[in-house]
Length: 164
Image (cartoon, rainbow, N blue to C red; front, side, top):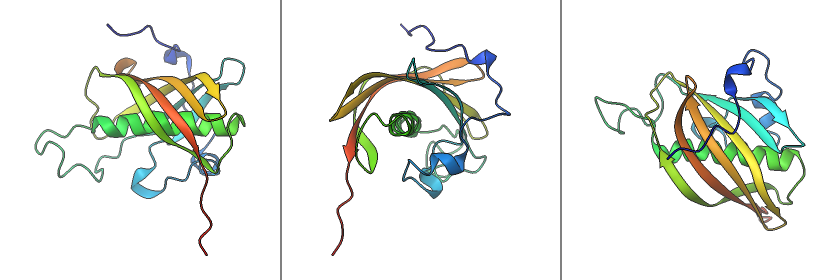
């Protein structure tokens, strides 16, 4: 059974992001096809909650091979979008060390409806457990205010090794 929405997304103004893609790139290392976060439109430091979105391209890199003739956004990429929002917000708030937050795991993943090329995937992330070695966040994804997935994301600090 789906959880109650973490945030009422109908009240958001998507034309006024609080963090643009350029600002997100200061905290997240993903680039090119692996950028799964277009902007952040809401951030509440007290509640440790952020809402962002990913505008799924009409011709995404996975289109040709993932369910030919019936293109569906891969669930693993929905999870990646949730992890990117969680990692961005935890790093922005300075809650964890490291060069970036890496995927540490997921729990309770449920896919509720499909996401198609051209959709806007709205992601809600609420940081729920913060420890110096790990962050957990409750996440949900919506398309047209319909719940399409939910999961608990686990992030761990990642330190880049210096190449000599």
